[in-house]
Image (cartoon, rainbow, N blue to C red; front, side, top):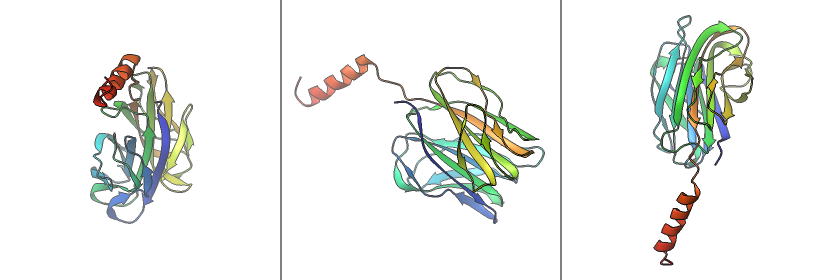
Length: 228
């Protein structure tokens, strides 16, 4: 099965708190959730949890040496589904200007989907990550950005803008690109000139069963049914 974007939700909190929750979303068993969490202060994300009880794996973080703003990336693979799943991030301290984005993908590897990742920070109108070099032909590149001031986002070349943290102007956004060949890639957003932090992570497609595997599976089912 090919990788496909399913849905995404985002949220932006301005009042002081230790957590931020994304709006409830319909998440399907076996899919991949990619989460970006940010804040304008020098905190880390202590944990991510959801109402379905899925386990989230930390990927990486970047902190701006100019503003102290951070963004982190986490994911949950081969998830347990929930029609109204709420994903909540907990910070290491009480903070304002909190952002969260949760994007869902189908067709990804259910055991070890993460391939490569990189980060970036700066002050310009083109938030850009460092390069990654993928190791599998079929992957989805998912990028997130958190900015110091609200802005309007446009996807970079060959990317599709997916989720905003809040209505335009927004505090953060995500985009993705599905590729079918190994190569060196980065991710770029277009935004008004300001301070930003970015992350891109690539996730592999599920392996496609060959004829031998399909035949073996069919034979096993027939034996279990007493046909063979």
